[in-house]
Amino acid sequence: MRESGVVRAHLSGTNGTLKLMVECLLIDSNSAERERLAVLLAGLGFDCAQREKTEEAILYCHQQAPAVVMMEASAHPSTSDFLQKIRVQRQGSKQPIIILYADSPDVDAVVQSIHDGAAEFLARPFDRDLLKFKLEQAGVLKN
Image 1 (cartoon, rainbow, N blue to C red):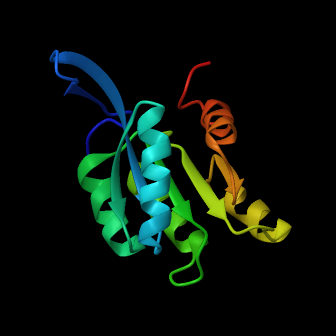
Image 2: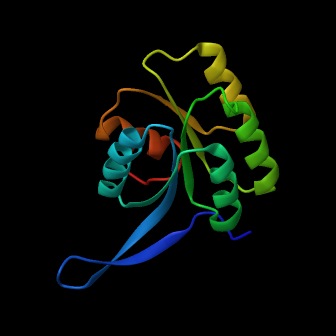
């Protein structure tokens, strides 16, 4: 497994300038939500890979070790199962995982996610400023 905190260099714009981007994995069963979040994250300097299913995401994390993972809270397989598998796979790495919840998340589910290894949670809907704030809290962005 590679070191977490992957930063990639990309050529941007027509002038060929080099731009550093932090690698992020988005896990969400809703493709429109994944795209919306990818656009927000790109504006904050993230290069986003997207996966629909947690099984695909676990394999991706093993192969790529993205700097941050953002995933929707789900029941199948459970968020807790995913967090536990990633924690074992990371072997002590501090790759933050941010859990995305529906409008009004269940407090017990949020507490369980944090206990299982999530760095932060974010309730939908949210805007760019709140997303940026949460990424700063998770230590992924510097203000």
